[in-house]
Length: 203
Image 1: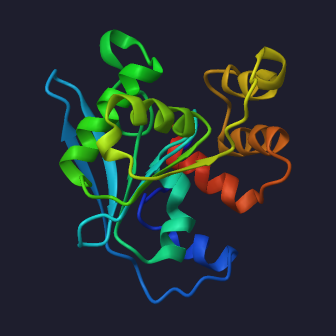
Image 2: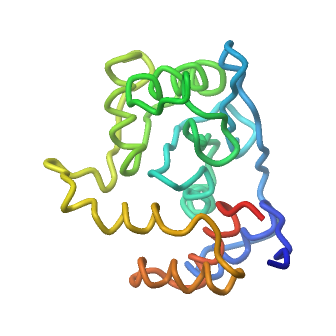
């Protein structure tokens, strides 16, 4: 498969255009790494230069770029984490990705980068990780916002997501990846899904 040109900080103008947000040039955002003390690290997108006001945790099989459009809209100093085993972060402790262990790793990163954040916002897996974080390190969760976290999740409800994630390990080309992603995400724009693939896929 031929490589698709990709600059992880070069797509923000697309987010802004799609959602009608003002865009006056590339935002101040940097990728940072937090040492977890056991040879692993969590990767973080730090937006702005002031002390972060909010912490964002993405959903399963996603990454910190999930929140790019939100970050552009807020124009506030925030941090968006790559959860263990996602994005640029290393895997979980002893290869496991349990909620309590994930929350302990997230706590290390939040203490290092955003100890005074006013709230933690988590979507799906990030939402239940936020709940776990509130038990592991309640002092770091002054308030929380949960997105797409439903009670009573079971195998039947999760089946479409599991089918998508457990699909082929590789596909013939980028267009095939995009077509499959659109099939499983019919309510999202092709442009947003293309960005998501570029941020998530290994070429």
